[in-house]
Length: 403
Ligand code: APR
Ligand code: PHB
Image (cartoon, rainbow, N blue to C red; front, side, top):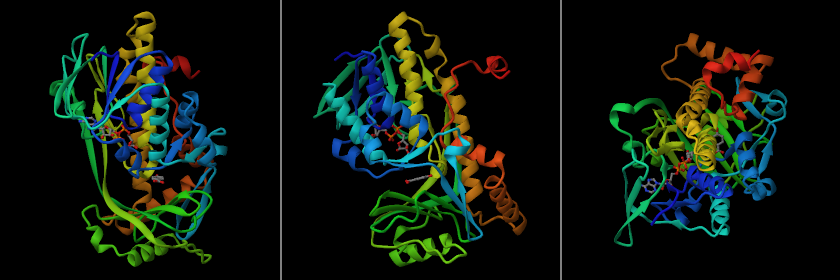
């Protein structure tokens, strides 16, 4: 089988890329390890920043998000029992975020893909990459017990943190940066009323808590826990009592509770792979970088990576130029590192570090007070939270841009 772009992985990165390429008349084939039900049913994060909202709308895949998503103009930061509003829209020049869960984005993208008359090859096994430093790279895989080969012009590695694509970049040119946190998140879905009109990020001596939402009757909340804790130690009563303690305000407000219908603990990691390209292989999304969820950036970074990749591939087919493709890593990583910085900053700002002395906790509370009360602080949070723009120009030309 032959195609122009062989895409490994049907997550947000792979599916958005396929749609962007289709709109430019470029053919692609997606290979996915899991089943369609599996990718459409897995609960993941839920915030799309303005940059991603714009990409989905431009691609013609934003209708259901616009109808069913919950658009937020801001969020709340809470500490010392006080709730402070961050007016994201005001401090970012009119931008917003939308609560629209990742699996709903996946459902819309898969439907759009089928409407384009394209297929996704699900349930593939043993995916390997070959000849990526030639003009005819190949992906080999097994499907229904048969060995198959896909010959491509380009390979897009959109196969997440554990996929094979990143490892196909030779060790001597791949530099990986990894940072582990001593914090884990316990996430729940509960049948309860929304906590507020916008998300609440709460810093508390007992640990961080985040009150998010899915629908008017289904809420998504998180608690900072030990990453190696066992979920069996967390009864529903214990979860609600911690969520209540960490998020109640001085005026007596308490989070509405209800039956918990799913719960799990995950560890947080920051990871960046430099470079994001080798020969005809380009990696995107979680295959190239991961962030802790505190800044709500994971899916959004995947979307902007593939926007850069699709533009580079389009230029190649339109006029034979590799200028943009040659700069793919440079353009993506400039934005990736800033999102990594913001996610790391939000994580350190909001989580309770058991090793902190009272001075360090005092500095942390002062930082929270600063960022939620100064115009400069509010602008910094807002412009990063709604998503920084892609900087297409060369970094060394920046002086010419900022006069
Ligand atoms: N062969 C084929 N497909 C694979 C393989 C493989 N060997 N390994 C992984 N995949 C698939 C996974 O099954 C998954 O569907 O690649 C897809 C990668 O999707 P994501 O992990 O969602 O990554 P990405 O598209 O980069 O999106 C990043 O998704 O999981 C969130 O927190 C993450 O929000 C971030 C966003
Ligand atoms: C979520 O709703 O899942 C969510 C929201 C904001 C975050 C992380 C997760 O920062």
